[in-house]
Length: 391
Image (cartoon, rainbow, N blue to C red; front, side, top):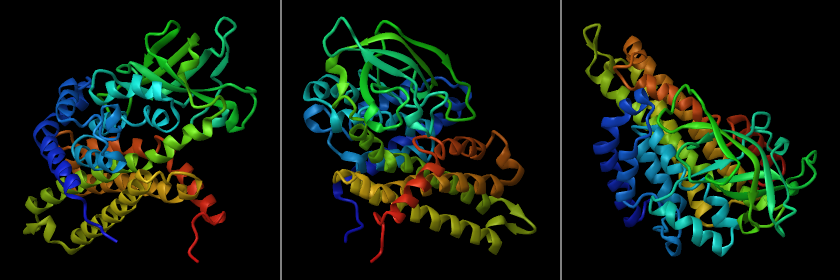
């Protein structure tokens, strides 16, 4: 058992760490305040060949896999959860295509994500169907004018990157609309400029400002048969893409936790109180020690999950381990950001310090791509079903 990163991954980690310190750290507060998309940071990620980390080399990426993307997201999220999301969006919409898509789809859609000429988003959630995926109401019905074509109608909401996306991965009911079976749902690729695609609203969010989240409406949108991901009714296969995403989301949690704790630790080392620094109080040291331990535990879960995903181990029997990483790391992000605010006291609540920004941004992580409660349910089912068992 080897816990050391390979020389290639260490070099990647150092490259991204330097970029994060030089380019992202100075811009984090401005991005939050303005809520403007940070195109300059996107360009820097593109120039550093970081947009195709998880995309295979034959489709224009670097082939670094989930582990490489996990490491990169951890580094950038130490300073900006927004940039972590920017990198995450290179994998979330492309995952189902890489797993279940046709060769033609891979050649048409993946290279432009890797080289930064196109961006994509992922359409799953709906106003009445967030965690309850089977309750979605968006429908795809056969196109009477095109053999094996489809017509898409419905609304998707809370879509990250909605304004910037050139195309969407969208899931819709192709079977009985009242069915709760996964084989009644199918994945599609929808170009953003297709007639009938509308983006009527951008959400006003608590945090993670700078990448728009909003709504997509599909009004009689025609979808070519070549844009069906996998088989009709192949939602289970496409969902494997979400399973493989768990360590990538978890990386945002550990990166944010590291950034918050590092900032707070430097602050208490220099803040005088009662004739010494705050850091000299044993109670403060214990809180820092406990948080550092939880961050390292989250890192081990996350790196293991990334290692599993890169081996293709994201089917049912591996779900508990993947979900543990997402659940624990995102909760640690929330806990660490809360501790950072507390360690700074009143100062931590003010915008002159990034702790309140960490605190706002962290809350998103326990909700997106499967809430903490959904992850606990998956872990619990895995134990009850002996997918995770210890003898």
